[in-house]
Length: 138
Length: 138
DNA sequence: TGGTTACTTGCGTCATCATGCAAGTATTGG
DNA sequence: CCAATACTTGCATGATGACGCAAGTAACCA
Image (cartoon, rainbow over all chains, first blue to last red):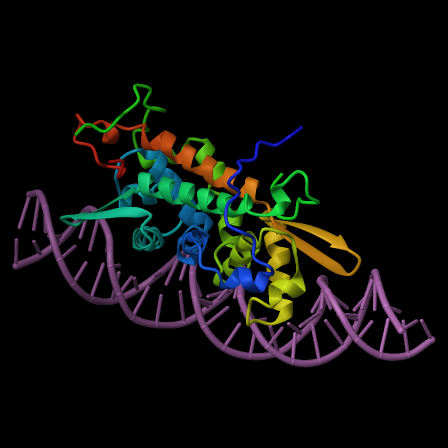
């Protein structure tokens, strides 16, 4: 069974990892440690999922009711997610409203997938006629 | 200017974050701390980017040449990425070959984007006729 | 068989960070 | 003006994890 492979197979594969590391590509910028660090905590992910599923902006007090941790912890997590560009923050009087930046988030993840795929299709590993399989692109 | 909104607007938005938190959805499983933890370190991301751009499987020794950190650090990072399902690991004699699981990674990111978008479109915030804007879906 | 290569593992150290409590600030309502 | 509400910030603590060095293991070669 032939995998469908476009004729334009992406950039030429570098000779070695050392050369690969020197190359600057879209994927380098999109593999942003700060984004993943912000998402690397279970509590933060629960709060984020809660906000996403809620489908409207929520105050810190509201979100804190979803979670067994201290209020201050929730407040800090939400502020951090906002600093990372994952949430929109809006102050109204004494209330902080947070809402997920869904389109931005989706776009980032899709762009990352696209950027990876570019290289995934770049090497002979994806050519079914070569020994291949090196980058797992099967 | 009207944003294009499908008539099927996703699940009904929960009344409160507390209800939202109780709901089990695809997005909960895809927001996996372990994946993001694995991607939360700058050194690991450099190694991963290197492997992606290289377009073929690489040995630990090869990858270590891209990076100024100790060899053992590189070996540990690659093993961790493999445990997280981000890399494929293959032992051949005394050589460990690592290669990114590009299609898997892309699929995970795209699935996550899809799962978020489901909820993004769920609430009145996405309805241009409502006061909206709550979840940042503009 | 003995040395080299390639990687793994143990250990100590240092930095980061998640958490809870308590105190502080700012806004609102009576 | 005072008290309640909503959030922020400081601080101590404990846990996690990244790193380098050194020692260990396993495969290969001469």
